Image (cartoon, rainbow, N blue to C red; front, side, top):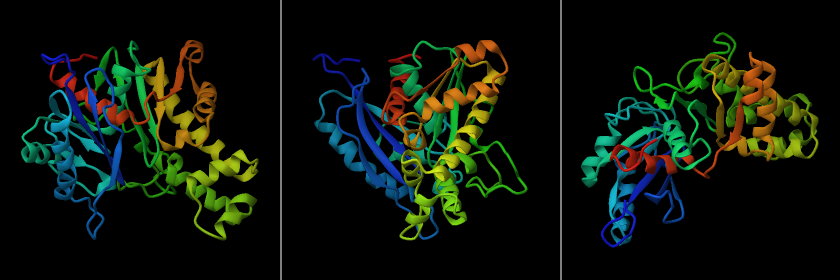
Length: 330
């Protein structure tokens, strides 16, 4: 939307993740008006994120918007967890220790602006549908693999929210509730605990301790193993690190193939920190997923591609503002 001077109006986009909060301003054409800035999430002594402190961090950005040409139309709030897009209630955000926190209302009340909250994976999919690789597709899954693993769905040309507006956390489907790893959601054995960034680091540590990875064993003598270390060791030819990454790829392919077999998707847009671990990671998942697809048509037609934007959640949070205000459509 342009005002009378021909300048595009804009939104403040916020992405509250498990450890950091990202901010940017995006106009109605999808252009970022400033470089993305990040702040650490403020936690209390019991590792619960402090909503009031988050509101304080947002305040300077609302003030800064007054110097940007155009009008600030609202705030798009992406949040890593279950957030009702209609009420703004963060019902369960495990990484932040939140259970029924009215974060949307708190921010709206603080600044007198319309606030449009939703789970981060929904926002990311919106960003890809409006200004990214998913534009024009009707059956799409957004998938992300980073600190957590999950996604969101666009079916028959519509966002699929589900009964409680929480559809999409397929990373919390259970693989092994008896012998599996503890998950942040409170249960054991979720897919996320086998394929996420922390899971890669944990498996790398095990490979180092068992002697399967010489490179990672050397690192472990000096400091803890990181996800990046495992990818770097694989790139250098370490067999143990390669086995770790191949297991992650196999489990991701099995998980995502279940979505495709069930929903007959034609596109998966894949993002998150783990997918950036190597230049060919998404391609490797795309090749491996064919081993688990049911139909020849899916094997032939399915595309698995990297996310378009550096932070699709932020771009989607802005797009959500414009969609909810009737300026854009999916």
